[in-house]
Image (cartoon, rainbow, N blue to C red):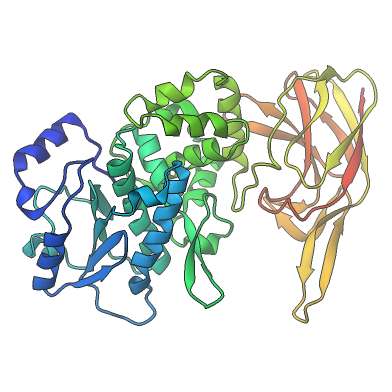
Length: 441
C-alpha cells in the first residue's frame, strides 16, 4: 500500500505538522539520523546497510533472515535503478527507513509511527519511510519489505504519482524475487518478475488468484485494470495489477512502448501517455493480455508464447501444418468457417522434458499426439495435441479437439490454432514437432 496522493489525504498530512519526527510528504526525503537516535533510545534493533535503515522490535533469532534484509534491499535497489535506466551511483546517498513491527505501540511510543499514518493491514509507505507488519513466513516478509521499498524508491527518485494499477503493479513486479546462494553460500537477491516456482513466492498467491478468477469467468480485461479504483487492497487487485505490468514489460511486442513510457513522467497521465504512443494497437494489446492471463503459470515464457493473430487463408481443401513442441499457441495459417465439420490427423514424435533419477541418470520423455499419462497439465496428458479457436469474449481459447485424430466443428469464423499440451513455463526443453493434416468436410 502506498500514499496515493489523493488531494484530501495530502492536505490531511500537511495539516498534521508532523515534521518533528522527520516524516516526509510523498516525494520528500526524511532525515534518517533522528529516527535512528529515537529507535536506539527506545531499545529497538537497528540494522543498517548502504540504502536502508531497518528498525524492528522483532527479537534476534538465528536463521530467520531478518539480519540479511538490509543487504538484500541494497541488491534490489541496484535492480530498481537499472529498471528505470538510472545509474545506481547517482543514487549512492539515497537511504530509506523501514520499520518492521511486531508491536505497533512500541513504535508509536518511540515517535516512529505517528497517529497521522493511516491504519494499514500489512504495509504503508510515505516518502523514503515505510512500515511493515512482521510476517511469520520469511519469503513473504522479504517480499513485503521490498514492495514498500519500491514505493519509497519510485516516490522519491521518480516522483511517482501514477494510477493505481501501475503504482501497485510495479511495486509487486520489482519486489518479486528468489534467493540464490553465491559461491560463498550467501543468499543473494535474484529478480523473478514472473516467478519460476511456487516455492519462490510463498504466501503470495497471485497466479493462483488469477487462474481461479479466469476459471470462474471473471477475468478483468486490461481496460478495466487500467481504470482500477484507488484503495482496493485485496489479493485479486494486486494480482491483476502485477499481471498487467508483468505482461506489458515482458511481451516482446509491447515492452518497448512500456519501457519508453516508464522513462517519461510517472504522473496521473501515465496510462494516457502509454496508450497514445505511436504504434500502440489497443485491440492487439487487449487480446494478447487476455491470452496471457488465460495461459499464465509459473515460469511463463514470453518469447515462446507470442501469438500470431493474422486471419490466414480459408480452409477449403486438405492442408498440412507443423506444430512445434517448444511453442505456445501457433496459428495454422488457415481459417475455418463456423458450422462445417473438419477432420484432422496428427503424426510424429516429440520430446516433452526429462526425468532425473536419484542416481543421476536422465530419461528423455517422448510423446506422440495423444500425450503421455506420466505427466498431466490442466486435466490433459502432457504432449497431447490441442486444436482451438480464439473467442473474443471471456472464453479466450476454446479447445475444439485433442489427440492424434478426430473431427470438430468450428465455433466461429476464424483461424485455427494448435499447440501441444504443456505448461508455458516448461516449453524450453521440448524438442521436435508434430505434423497435422486438416481435411474440411
